[in-house]
Amino acid sequence: SSAAMDDGSGHTIAVNNQRADETSGTAWASAAVTLSGSGQEIEVDCTKTTITGSPETDAIYWGISIPASQFPGTYTGTTTVAAKYSEVGQGW
Image (tube, rainbow, N blue to C red; front, side, top):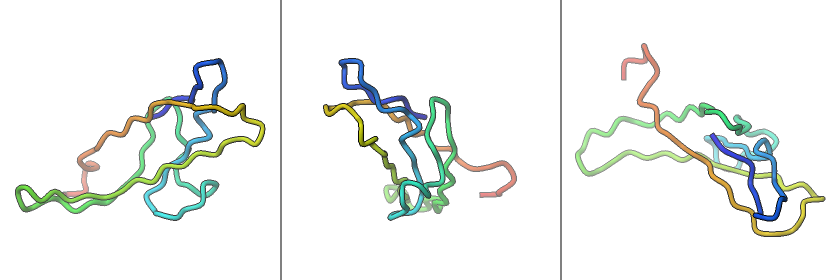
């Protein structure tokens, strides 16, 4: 989930200007998920770790579209990422 980005002076960049995808190099307009204030699922297939101390990893790519008319400044916000072990019935 994510939230609008804010410059602290009343200017914001809407949350739906943020998108995410599991593939590097995906164009913003083609990204699989448009972020919102509620949780969105991005399926990332990561192999289960079988060796202690050697975790498996995978990446999620985040992008933002800043409108041409956006007030210039430093904007901050929060994006929350949580892992989900597996879907029911996948047998991992």
